[in-house]
Length: 369
Ligand SMILES: [Zn+2]
Image 1 (cartoon, rainbow, N blue to C red):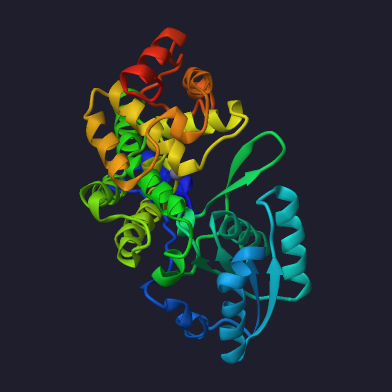
Image 2 (cartoon, protein in one colour; image 1 turned 135 degrees about the horizontal axis):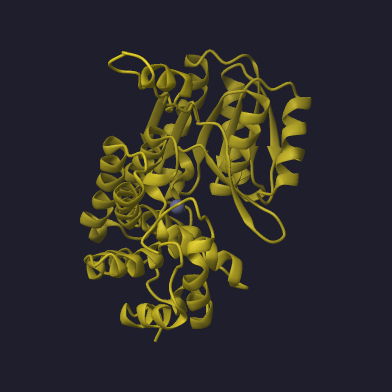
């Protein structure tokens, strides 16, 4: 992500320049969404002018579903491609995959798989300074088109900056084959933008934080697209993927415009990160953020019933039990959430919730019974 160049702003501050703002934004160049778009992979890579040597990074299961096909399509289009099988998204795995991609002298890389394989690919591409194409086989969160990557180590999950994909191929015929739970989780992640934006506006009012109305509007638009079409998002229906995937991609674009995850990550994400730390069996990122958004909307005094109903309609979790975590883990996560990322000001404030307030919040919203 290219940040604003401070020297330009300094230049304006101390002189009579009437205007000195500057900001860079990095977006995908081509996004193809729809039935069978995997077939366009070779043409897309030629259009980008990629050299012959490339690599496909995929998982053991996603190789069979789409990774091997991606390699075949590229080979038929004249590319020399090495398939690299990636496993868990850890720092060590990024090093190993990066070394294999480099050994093949790949000049571009295609990530084929779920969130973790795409995350590994975006970090490898950023480190090697080569372009990458994102070919998701599921849509469990909003990271398909964003530069943010989540890497795990033995104790925690860290958010790392990777490359923005040059191209995105979201093939609805592939994504509909993934377990429906993943798509519902991706939708819940986008629904949770609603509270992220309320937190952002609060931080603007209380902390004069930098704000982008374009990014905020894109993020809210994405959330409302999912909420308004919740009844049309169901299992085993390719059109559901079509309806859900575009807002998921727009959420990624909102982050590109803002130059940070701010438009799509507020107190509900802090709750999810806290739950990852305290729970012995944390759930999917998007699912946890959806449940977090119900509770944070209550704190904002907003219409939390509407969020909850949208999640229920989609079939995403709305309770601790459905997340597979204990009531106590939810309370612990609520109490510690404000401390996860102190620079991100939210409705949780500087001191967070007391245990009593957390218990009340979780029970009033029906997250714990
Ligand atoms: Zn998220």
